[in-house]
Image 1: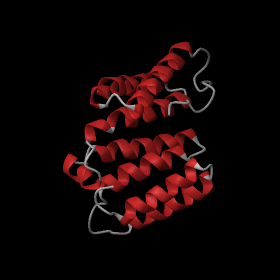
Image 2: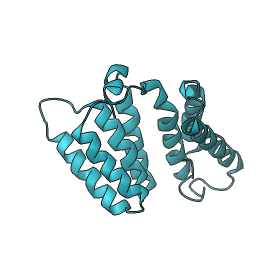
Image 3: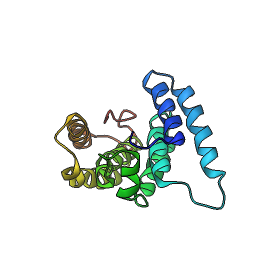
Length: 170
């Protein structure tokens, strides 16, 4: 992190809990941060905080509809985020690099809900924005997630909503 940011540090604490398997503890931290962001009233929350928090909050949801709601919130916040603000947090960040993962997550949530057309739309958007990813571990992970979800969508048969739950896209 290039610039200290207490909100991002708290979000990181929640994400550490999520990675350690404590989804409920992570969700609790994320809810606290979300409530604090909404409490500012007079000014809109920092889009970097919203996109980061919503992106991680989606991952700790048990209900695919809630996951989609948070994923869409993250995607919407990214549209308000500037490269300058992202770079204040870390010099390597650019907003364009957020979109492959954000669209992939939205696509996976739609897929889990049996909404194939919407899933394909966002998966196409994820694939189209991959040019902004580096050829590193993160870029390979996202590209691999896109390929896996594409294969899942192609293999999905049966009634909507019977896709087997949450897609393993990350």
